[in-house]
Image 1 (tube, rainbow over the protein chains, first blue to last red):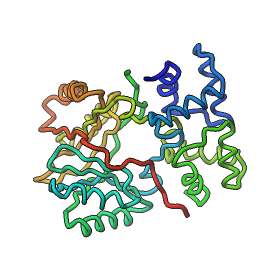
Image 2: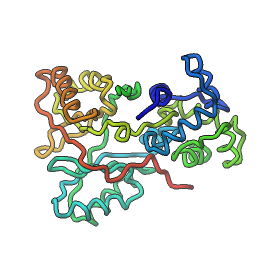
Image 3: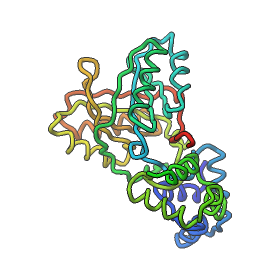
Amino acid sequence: MLTELEKQLLNDYQQGMPLVSEPYSEIARELKQKGFSVSENDIINSLSSLKERGMVSRVGPVFKPQKVGDSTLATIAVPDKRMEEVAQIVNHFSQVNHNYKREHHFNLWFVVTASSQEEVEQVLEDIEQQTGLSVMNLPMEQDYHIDLGFPLWC
Amino acid sequence: MDELDRKIITATQSGLPLVKELYQAIAQQLNIEPDLLKQRMKKMLKSGQIRRIGAVPNHYKLGYKANAMSVWNVPDDMITKLGNQLGALSFVSHCYERPRFLPDWPYNLFAMIHGKSKQEVSEKVQQVVTLLGNHCAGYELLYSKQILKKTGLRLKKV
């Protein structure tokens, strides 16, 4: 489902691409050295196709939320019958950027990211008020992840 | 972070354009020089506000359909050492210390583990179990059942 070029692009350029005027041309040059005969246009077309097929969600900067605002992970134990309704309430907040249903008594897990800690807390309060359920707030205390990228072992 | 940095974030947070001279395209939109844009982005990379600039893979669409949020109860005085060990594993994409909420929630170390199947994820989990040994007082796996929402950072426009 992925061509060799697409795999190489994903593995080599998820962690960083050159911050130069014409990065896709630079990527083509680097890949030529690895034996791919590709042009700048090929790179642009491959990335566009990966994006269209949903395999790449975007090409661009990944921001560290705590450095540009504040964020937290929160969870609610939602009674099964109310899952759809509660999920909708939570999703409705633009500050909620991830929301997952998980297999556990605490079955709804979401990330709230906002410009300030006060705004994050306000969102959690609003969610409690609108759902009538209590929210367990689990803010990050320490980040241990060494970000070496995610090798695609496919 | 000043006004310009914020504008740069709002202009790039949903992705860079897939065109040849992309920084010029964004700079034009912000009405600044392309060199200033690149300089500011370099600064944000250096300070850690930008983790990286690249192709952001959608693991789910790429076939890594199983992901478990693994949560571990480890001694507070060991957490830095153990957290660093877990955080360095290639199949772990996030590894955070978070507060416990007793008695409901005894877990203080979170690690997101990815695989193509639940079977593959549970093999990876066994590696973590071995690594933590008797420092682990308990753990649970919370498999994702459904993604209800997933977007990048969305700062409101100023």
